[in-house]
Image 1 (cartoon, rainbow, N blue to C red):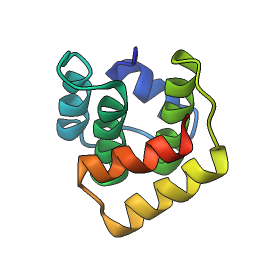
Image 2 (cartoon, one colour):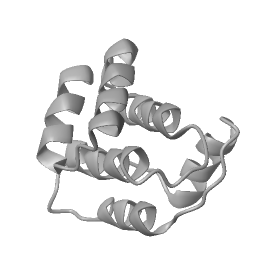
Image 3 (cartoon, rainbow, N blue to C red):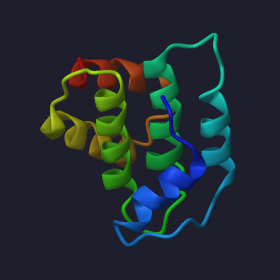
Image 4 (cartoon, rainbow, N blue to C red):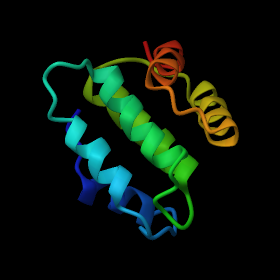
Length: 111
């Protein structure tokens, strides 16, 4: 997926948020260059960084959903926005950190 830190910040700024913590977000961005893992896993790292570590002051869940939609569009896949919203809320609320679990949930909403 072609997304960098600046793009994530722009997405979140549109939702009236500001970046407060960059560490896990930078790690998730660095995982985007890892050729050994698949695209859904790369998206899962971004989602975990955004939804569990809350790097933005506001709009973390909405930012994650927008990133997933961008992922689907870039990969010419369909998506269920309602499912993505529900998954984002669940991951955030339950602090789901398992990348494989997040990946399975995303694959269920983006096909």
